[in-house]
Length: 162
Length: 290
Image (tube, rainbow over all chains, first blue to last red):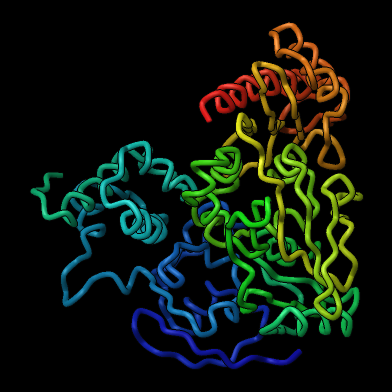
């Protein structure tokens, strides 16, 4: 089975790698690019722990082959903070206690990134519906919803309170 | 979980993809959104020797009205269907369907063409396509197009009327006349689950008389099922509560659900009946609001 040479941009950095076609995108991210912030949970596209952005759209990287990202741009949790400043979503999760064990958090934040990009002022229902493909077994979701609302307010330039 | 080794091809045209299908025959699988195929490959239920990725073929993603048809390109993502202004304003049944398919991230990958070509009676688009009497456009050698009526498309367990060297390229729906409305709902245990039962209804009212009716059922038989007796009793009539109840009773009798973790056979039949009643009413409301 022939290997493929692929080029992709990860968090702004260009990579050229040679991969087996069956290599999953999440394994490329974690084991080849060493970006271990992206987690593997269920490995069956249910839990959302492996969620990243592919050309700005949230996808579950356990259910894509790495070759499908050829010529594309991916963003992982490591790509959010800029110049030592946490992204508003990261800040929101921290301030609102939007995590306990933290396993779902990178996926939850990446999914929320696209949600806020499409809908900067979501209702609570839209947030809950928007993260419906990301499972959290600790928080009961209430503080995650608050964290996303915190980020939405901060990104609109409004005063924020946890 | 790691799939069995395979060779990956990424053709840039349909003709190239067809010639790869001809070359590799049974060993090849088309990769569209991949959210049915890749899980099956990881579980090794599917072990294709060749994966032909059609995502780099331009011109297969669109939603437009043309020549009396609503035309949807096979590579159109579920999220594009969910957020399409045209579908929201004129074909709300698509919003009902797409928001119940998996979750937002899966919908960013999953395509309507893949949902249909997979040939799974548990998928949601087939029932809606039966209700809308869609036509499936298959492209084969020499860019020859073949139009397959939806009633002939689903042929068995994961089996469709597509030939081994054809690709589903477009879905066509005759544009419903004014006074039409459609609705879909499925019961699911949680987001991302397959339907316990699902019902799609498309109808047209002319001064209260039903002049078009299409009813499709999800995941309550081996194939996506048209509720024929339920349709026949409504067509040409004024839709009274008694008549709608009788129509729903027929669908609950004519489907063949099996008992599983989602519910007993009896429960699923009861849900087909209830969903059908509700979807007829929602479709009627939308037909009037049009």
